[in-house]
Image (cartoon, rainbow, N blue to C red; front, side, top):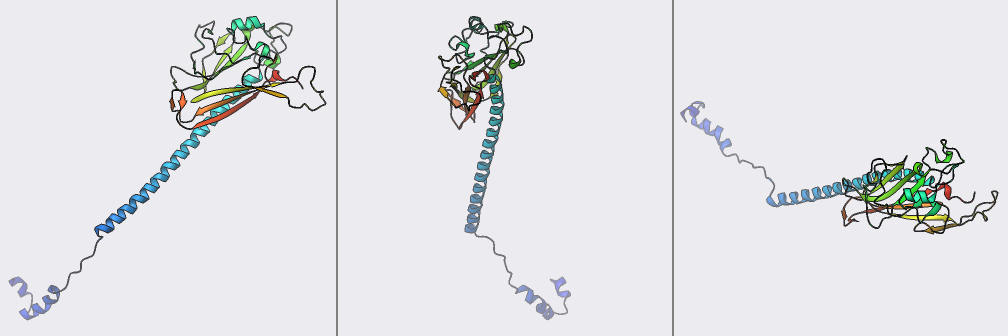
Length: 297
């Protein structure tokens, strides 16, 4: 205290100097009340929930669009292969078609009911194996309720151009025929049903090609031209449509169908229970014209 007093000329002077300081009121800054904090927190939570919900919805829509685009690409590629094979059904160039008895012996009666149509929806025989390797073509296990489709045509690179090795004055050899099987099934490495393509070239069945994954079913529709050889309109007359629709191959026709329609039921999320889709189902339709199915021109 002595030190402080010495700094002033007198006690009176000190009092005059310190009194204003000692009697000054300290002003405190007011903060948020508990209620204000609770209200602000609640509003923040509501805003965050709304933003999160919008983000999740946008993300799910984006994933659905992405999946849809991927499936459309897969189905488009499968459709190109399906149309290419269907276009060649029963086409052996300038040669006569193979002997039906030999054909059914080679293909284990796949074409016993379809005659000269060279297309079959018969279940693939379990003994249909490669003569060279002996492996079973049914490395794909077909699912029940979905019919496969088998198409047979010339084994040459171009069915429309004939076979140069034997010429046109011969019957096409069964051993040299090509074939394509489209089947919905599962494999040892893919337990979800999918669309597979199995090809036969030069008497050898190839490994299954995975075309479209998560396919629940494939339904087939066949369209036949009801015009006969003797009632076709003249070439200078417009040809009127005269198609007959069947859910399976017609046993009354001696020619292949003019149009084949394959409807794929796809389980987009890939979630199955007892081979049934548990989420969104998308249907895609593939239409393929058959060159040999034409009767009138």
